Image 1 (cartoon, rainbow, N blue to C red):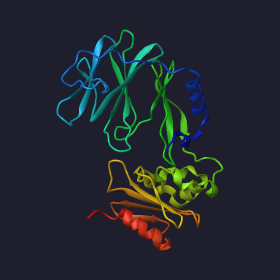
Image 2: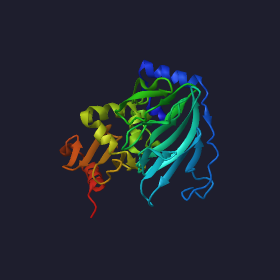
Image 3: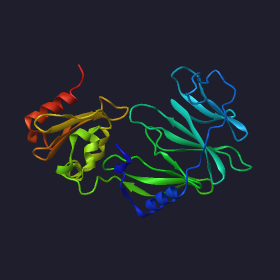
Image 4: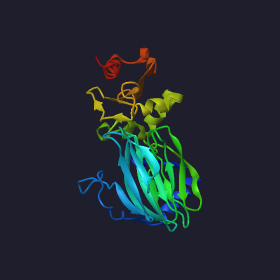
Length: 299
């Protein structure tokens, strides 16, 4: 899915984006890596595990293979998780800030962003922006602030946050998912879909889906997050299935678009079985068969 999905914003979020667009991004190159340690990567294109920063050393260490990694500054632990990687050092409001990606890893799970900085005359500080379990808004850097732009799935609304050395982390506005305006069945092109989530870019399909799913929209959509390209039959059925990040096999979804009859169908398999929208008795046999095969538990 692309950023074109993030079309709806409130006024204050729009103002934030205008500020970011007006400033050139200030991203300094990473400082030269410190002397190699046993954890330093051998390949030149691997991220460093130790950098000089504000008179000390930021390090990433791993106590055991495939175990959690620890981000520390001169031995003081700042964050810990299975994926910890230096991103870059930027200058915001005259303060150097190290950006470090920290997360669980896994399909469709973006890491949180850990900010590390040292106020003039103060001690090292750190702040984690984003959900601990799975995903965080990417950071967009300007001269005087960092803006965190959330990645939205269909039906989502999320806060836009900004950070600066003086104000800290604050809420700038709200961002809502929106399909492409004024698009309908004539604009729907299955060959351009990289996943079934792309179908929600179409305004008419999004409207029908929202009406059909109601409060279950988020649950079903998240269940399509980890998926491949959809398939198309000769009868004009476009369908695909996926699963919830870190819960594949336990929280899976199915979606079908009937281009001939201009209808959509959804199913979600959870702990209590399979729920369908509309009711299963209203599903054409062909689509029911595709869904049953897709959501059948493994032997």
